Length: 168
Image 1 (cartoon, rainbow, N blue to C red):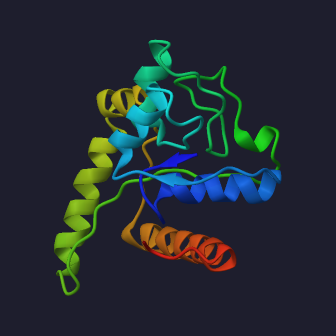
Image 2 (cartoon, helix red, strand yellow):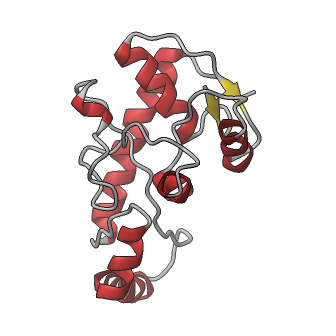
């Protein structure tokens, strides 16, 4: 099982799968997602839990075989791929991206950035491009995002602690 490095999303997704599915996969950490994908494409690795945007074109062109998506719902970009949760109940890992600002940034600045970013994410062209990459544009408030970060930190902290994952 290739990963982009110990403790990252590709590693944790694989470890969570191993635990929930009751399978044994040998973890082979690479120095980033690119080298891990190259190893998978070249046959040096048998499985990888990459982010969808990093692998979708390889799947579309037939260079990789997509087995499932790790999100809770099937992707509109490839609805034929099941979710892992369809055969491993409760499994879910999603890549997400967000913007942060330094502590002490004035509320007015944060509110203006949030308003502008939400407008961009609501734009049909932006939504279509994100969807084409296998993603979903989510709009929300800074409080919503802070809550989500706290929930994700708690979820993955438990996985890391229970599996005793240590940085190399």
